[in-house]
Image (cartoon, rainbow, N blue to C red):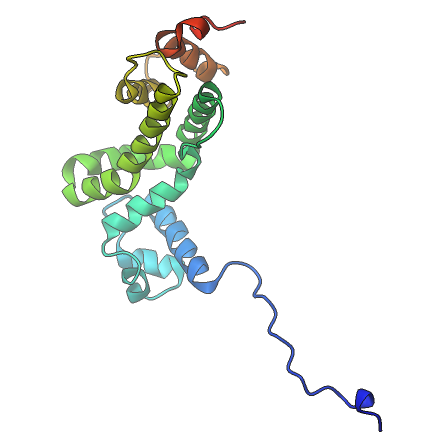
Length: 214
């Protein structure tokens, strides 16, 4: 029999595993479980035992990834609000408008709306959670938008002397207020992000572009 007619004894290479790697999938299921338990029971009742049971994993599996409930919940909230991560490159006005629209979508999320009242109280009375929230969510995102603005300032895409820190406050503060604490305020118009950025832009744009065309 010709060699070419013999059955092959070579071992076929293993196929690429489908879906997410197990470790990533486990982490994602834990994050989803943390958000679900948090929404249903509140922060105090969202224990590591309850989260582990919802995720279908052992508590030690969670502790190998997160040192405490506070850090886990901060990371879960970071994932929930990942849409507001500032994006780099391109025209600064377009990037800021996209960032404001992302903020609007996140603040309008019904799940975040259910979570925020309890979280705001927890931030006041739980120093460990406040530190995790600041270190893992607030500071990195604020620094990213401030760096984007500083780069635009260096490229003379903003008015000389414009303060990136103050601009960052103006981008987030009004949007948070109108969507999270709207009591007594008019309904948020559909073009709110555009109107807000137009108002901010008049004070920060270079003189030649400070007046936006209709």
